[in-house]
Length: 153
Image 1 (cartoon, one colour):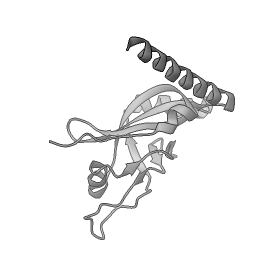
Image 2 (image 1 turned 90 degrees about the horizontal axis):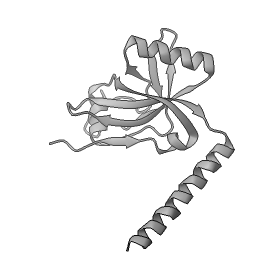
Image 3 (image 1 turned 60 degrees about the vertical axis):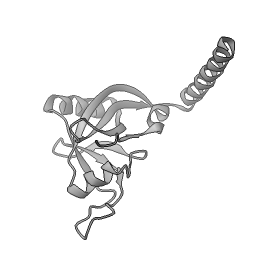
Image 4 (image 1 turned 90 degrees about the vertical axis):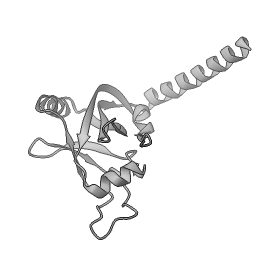
């Protein structure tokens, strides 16, 4: 029985307004998937970019070197290819080029077959006042939940 791996990008929902979400596969080497299964990965500072051939890559994703790896170990911050079908890739590329949106990773997880998948989202950057509104809404919700809890007890 394998443990559940779910590595989240908590900053993404605060920094960006999420528009559309996709689940993509990752092209990984052997030591990379072993390191992810140990939970030694981070996607907080990463983003996605298209290359000149129309392929989608995740940039700045940190996957620590595998602890039992030899000199065949991987580079921690290498570009990794994302796997989506052709229609989704064309739609994403058109949105990114035309409207200036960006693609951010939301969470990295292992599916039931043990394959690494990543949820990515087409996103628009928030302005400072939008971030302040998010903070205010979060605080109001927390206060409301606190009042509800004390009222029920």
